[in-house]
Amino acid sequence: MKTVISLDDLTSARTALTGTVGLVPTMGYLHEGHLSLIRLAKVECESVVVSIFVNPTQFGANEDLSKYPRDLERDLRLIEPLGVDLVWIPTPGIMYPTGYQTWVEVDAITHPLEGSVRPTHFKGVATIVAKLFNAVQPHKAYFGQKDGQQAAVIRQMTRDLNFPVDVVVCPTVREVDGLAMSSRNKYLEGADRKAATVLFHALSAAKTAYEGGERKADVLRGKMKEVLASEPRAMVQYVSCADYDSLEELDLIQGKTLLSMAVILGKTRLIDNFVLG
Image (cartoon, rainbow, N blue to C red; front, side, top):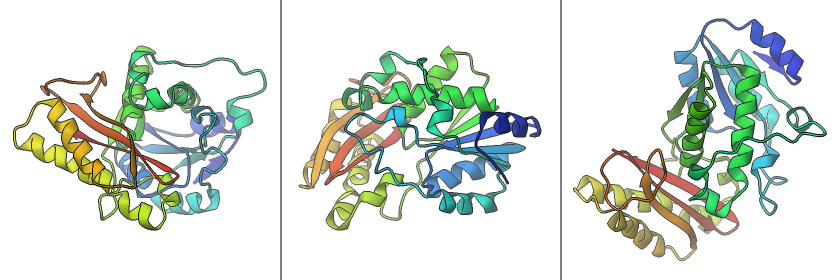
């Protein structure tokens, strides 16, 4: 496994990779969700690149950039046995050198949900993913469904800018009690960790109603809100039942649908989603 930092070293190492190249972009502090993406990339691609970069431009002014968990040595130990060919660990100065002023902005799909409470977030996400695609030149790129809106934004950007990259979105990996795996789960302690399962239970209640034949989106939103309201520690930011691709809120479910929510527990903000249909 080769590890590089500079763009020149990345370019040199990339030329040595053969066959289909898969990219797994991460912000580090890896968990089983990330590792599942790497394992799938190994199955589907001849060569696999993992990037580790905590992207400052997707954090808002009052968000947790300085506190975001980091442990590069641990990450590399987890990656090593998986047969990854190349790990790229750029610095902020490499990705955003002095004088940097070019941004990628995806329009309508970034406005609701996360965009309504984190208005600059997807500008940072789209820009860094475009830069990763340009630098690594992958044939496939692997993302988790846990960040459902992010996956939709990246799919849209990839289509709109004609990137020759197949965006592969993989199922959310969960703890035994249903909590979606996330690097931010490290912040959950005591009662907040126990209460965090309310997101999974709320989504499950809506899914059960859907599987029982319910197609009115307001009813499914109501099911989720009812379960969330049962947990006094949960501060709900949004609950959504939207079209899977456009993220427009639905009245009636007729195709692939994204149930999603954002909830604050103590000082930790959690997101989760289920895909219907």
